[in-house]
Image 1: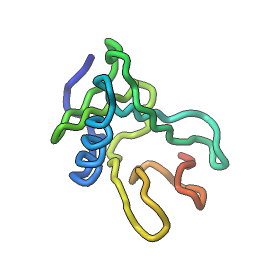
Image 2 (image 1 turned 30 degrees about the vertical axis):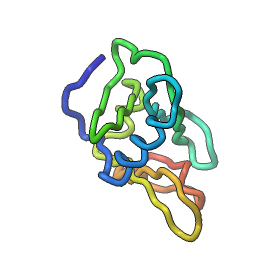
Image 3 (image 1 turned 90 degrees about the vertical axis):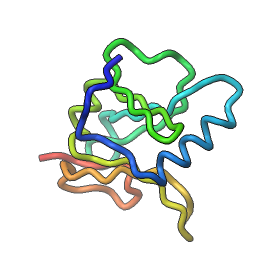
Length: 114
């Protein structure tokens, strides 16, 4: 489990919402953020509540009661990115602001990197 500094982070809004979600779980958990091949633009973000302990090579972010896990392969694609939480008329959701993404789909969960 790695806790070194990374260029991937989360906003205060995201940390608060993750903390709320984790607090409502019967067992300790974390939000796992992953980047998978697929989606309409080449890569897609995946968010899951994970009750398993972090893997030895997971990057762990702990902030304001929130715990986020990222595997090393996903972390490579998230350098400089930030996890945010938006609650707007179009709905509430987590979103990643990724400066590495050269294009994305309309739903915001799929992106490509040149």
